Length: 80
Image 1 (cartoon, one colour):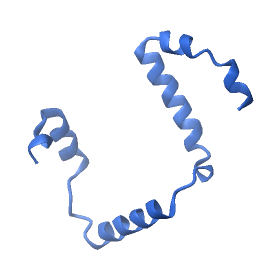
Image 2: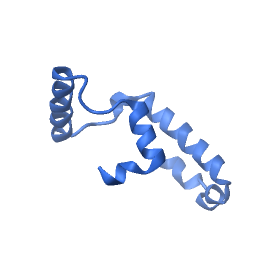
Image 3: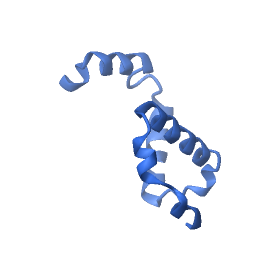
Image 4: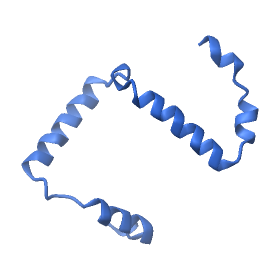
């Protein structure tokens, strides 16, 4: 990676947390923009296919995003 040598890691780590989070978001968005370049292992692809079939067979199973968010916020996920 020719440009990696020009990155000052210390300067990045000195940034406030919110700015580092924004930097990570920008990097992630740039990766997501070329998602076809990210290889998925055959094992992961098979697992995702199984999970998709399970969801399609029973889309009401599991929890809604609101339920998940609520359980994360109140800590009740720890007792599941």
